[in-house]
Image (cartoon, rainbow, N blue to C red; front, side):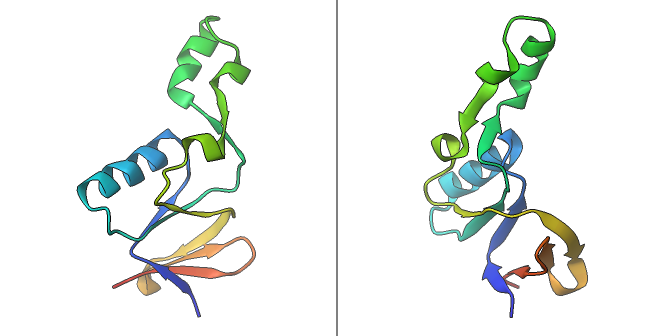
Length: 101
C-alpha cells in the first residue's frame, strides 16, 4: 500500500522548497511531502555568480535541514518513475507514494 500525501513535490531545490512554502502560506493545513535524497541544498540561482567568479560553489551550499520548511514532510529518497494513472510516484527502492484523490 502506498504512503499518501495531499501534495507530493519531487525535488528539494529552490523551486520545490519555494513551492511548498508558498502553498503552506496559503493553507497551513496542507499535507505536503518533498522527495529529496540529498543532505546538501545548493542555491542554484546563485550559480550564475559562481560562473562569474563572485562566489565559490561551496558558498551556495547549506544543510538541507537549514532550509527545509518546518511543516513539510521530507522523504529522503530518489524517484525512479511516475505512475500518473494511479496518482503515484515510485521511489528507487520500489516503494510507491500517492496523492489523495
